[in-house]
Structures are given as structure tokens and as C-alpha cells.
Length: 402
Ligand code: GCO
Ligand code: MG
Image 1 (tube, protein in one colour):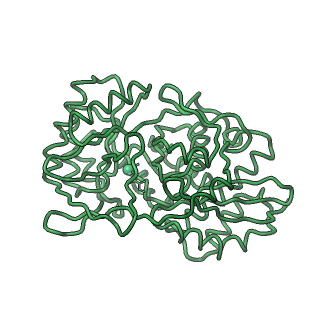
Image 2 (cartoon, rainbow, N blue to C red):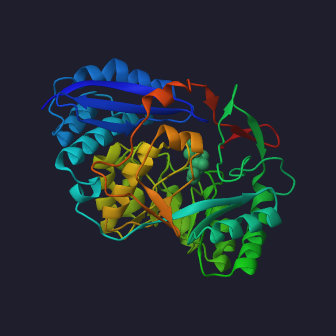
Image 3 (spheres, rainbow, N blue to C red):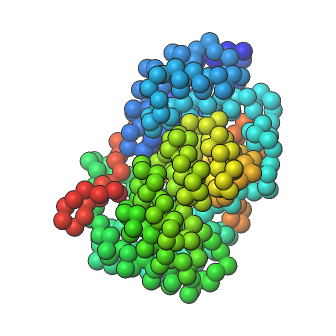
């Protein structure tokens, strides 16, 4: 069997997605997500100009060899563009292999380790009372875990506050939107917000929060400590983690669990965090971290240190990534939780899928492969529409992490 052709499908049913389709000489095809928010076209060019020509004629069954060929063969290793492109190929090849076997992908990954995948939804509001009500909404939908974000008094914008209700989309058209951020205002406000959520809803569900890389280690240590009475499931991305050692300081001060990894793209980005037990959850996901093959290696390393997985699942990761992630989640022994930000109806129509939500859990379904397809005709009706993620500045104008 040979790979006969492969091509990228770029579509914008409300937001931009890049999908790689790999077609074999027997007609069976596989799909992989290659979306990199705000930098979509760079992955398309990487795939079209540099990867696809090297795939034609190869045996699609040789998933690991093709992964090594694309990673080591490029000479230039790692990076979000390269690793998203490799991820797309890898995901498409696993999809093909599972379709040929006539099995849902999770069966090829060792079978089910659990019956369903616990997910968390995003509750947010412009102020405390709106955000507390949003938590009620998610609990009413059956969620067992809810991420809560609220607008900070004195600031016009804060990370994670939806313009629509269920679909948070931070990327905007035109040049990057500039937002103002104040760490001081946030630090004073955030424990009061979580006290209000627990006071209203009690402790019988998991509560999560995303700091979105905005604090220094000592500020994050303070926040983690101040949130201990609210018993969070995790505090996400408390500080940027290029310097993995930065997490040590936070760890010395708080027992609030720490989750990191949505911007990581390889095992080397998290190896020290895992081996030194500086985090509790690793949030790398299929599309940005080299596909199913590489994610399995990260999870296997994490398992040795009792670090659990918590894959990123924002709306900028397409249903193809979500489908593949669910098979991974169902199979790995050290699964923790899966983020689930719902896609719009337009996106769901472009990507018909077999996964489904019920009472706080997602189920990948039993269709052969990862169970997510693309309606290419419908996709063509939504041309690429450039959008950028915002940037953040401190009140004095200094650029800081968004
Ligand atoms: C999350 C993330 C997202 C990112 C987005 C960037 O935890 O869901 O932080 O909201 O900001 O994926 O493209
Ligand atoms: Mg996040």
C-alpha cells in the first residue's frame, strides 16, 4: 500500500482550521488537524512545500518510521510549525491504520482504560455574579468539572471572558488587539472570586482556572496559596515555562495542583517538569505536540511520575484533533481530564464526527479510525479569514504575556 496524494484543506466556518488529508492508492484516507492559531498558513506551506512531496509513495502503515523521517530528516527539530505539521501526518496515518483494521483508534492504542472521558467546560463572566451563574449553567448541562474565569475589577479585559456564551474565541480580525493587564488587580481579586463560586455551588465538582502564563513564579506561588481553600483541580499555566525550573518555586509554596503544556510541542519541553514532579497535569495535545505517536511517549514518561494528562481542547483545535485526542484519552492509563470547548454549529457541520457528550463525559464512538470526517464542499464555502490572538500590555505600556 502506498500514499498516493495528500493535500491541505483550509476552511473558516467561524474560525480558521487547517486539515491534512492523506489518500492511499487503495482509496482509504486519513485526516489530521494542522491548525496553529494565528499562524495557519505557515503550517500549510510547511506541509505543501516540504512534507507532502516526501510522503508520496511511502507505506502509510509505517507510522513510526515516517514520524522519525519527518522529525530527524528535517535536521531542524521541534517548534510549533514543524510539530503541528508532523502531528497532522501522524494523526492521518493512525486514522488510516485504524480504518484498515476496521477498528476505532483506541483499540490500536491498547483498548479502553475507562468507559468515558471526563471533560471540563468553560464558565466565564464579566463579573463575579455573571461568572458564578455561568458555573450553574455548566453544572446544569451535566459537567463534573468546570473552568471558571471572571473579569477583573478595574480592567476592561481579562483572559477567558467570552463574547458569545459557549464559544470563547480570542482571535480577532485585523491586527492583534491590544489589551491592558494588571497583575496586582488580578492577584487581589482572584481568591474572592473562587470563594464566591464555592460558596454558591459547594465542593461537589471539580473547579479549574487558567492563569494564562501571566505571573512571575513568586506571584503564581501567592495565587496558588490563596486558592487552596477553594480546592482547585488545577491552576493552569501559572507562569511561562520556557525555564522549566521556574515551576520549582511555585511548588515550594502551594499544594494547588499545577497544569502546563498547551504551548509545548515536544517531550523536551516538559521532561524536567515531569521528572522533577513540578507539575501534576501535562496539557500537550495531539495537534501541537507531534501527533498521537509523540503524545503517547509524553504520557508514558508522565506515568512514571504520577503526572496525569489534561489535553488542551480549545476551539482553535479542530474536531479532528478532538476526535483523535479522545481515543488517546480513553486509552492512556494516566489520563486526568480533557478540555472541551464546544465548536459552533457551522464547524460541527464541516466536520461530521462520531464523538458525543453525555453528563460531563465525551465518548469517541466506535466508527473505524478516529471517527471525524470533513465535508470538503461545505468547507470550500468558508474561505480563510486571517485573525490574530490578542497581545497584552501592563498599564504602563510594557508588553507582557497574553
Ligand atoms: C485554553 C487556552 C486557550 C488558548 C488558545 C490560543 O486553555 O483553552 O489557554 O484559550 O488561549 O488555544 O489559541
Ligand atoms: Mg490555557
